[in-house]
Length: 306
Image 1 (cartoon, rainbow, N blue to C red):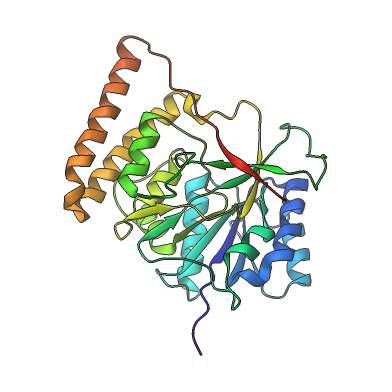
Image 2: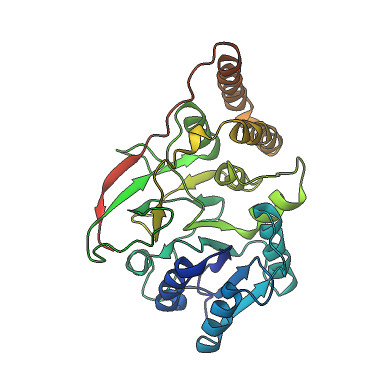
């Protein structure tokens, strides 16, 4: 009997509260689309988030709950669940659907992209980012709008296509003109996460994580699905291009990480050199002339149903 291609859902939870409850409802409705469902909570084991996770697990016996027992920074939390998966039988070529606790699985989107046997359209050598169905909520207030209202579909690709690009082309475009992008709802091989955890240079913070995860040694292309498979709850003033020094530090890691990528893909050396030149010129302009940071471009490609 052929193996069904389904990713492992990993939900990272930090001070989730009611947003985590909202997320769990979407997981409940979509769990049949995933090979495993792992809720990774970074807190002590008596926290409200753990109580929510354990109660959810009691109703859904295929759900796995793990806890760091203390609050960890993002990259350390990610290392925690990566180690858990590798200890419990996951293979490096398994796919990971990465979900943040304050977003939702868009079941309608997954229904649309999977075949009659439940297979996802996942191709070796490719990572999948977007598009993302967007809602906007205030930082201190849970979204309470019309749940049936059409959602904008945001993309990190050119608005009129293509929707599949070589890794370095996609990243070079982001260096020149940042767009909205999001780990939540991405689908990537576990191998890419393992590399980012174990290999040098060490990544310290979450900024630019999408591009760093994409640049795994075995990855050649980035693609987006035909429609959103996650609903993202954005915050006002979420332009990550304006995060300043922290983003610049992570840019330095990204450039070193891409140099590592080029050693596995020698034909990309010229493109990498151009990318480094562009990034270096931007860094110099920012430091010397105080050139304003480029604004994050929010690219909308139509609308979709919730």
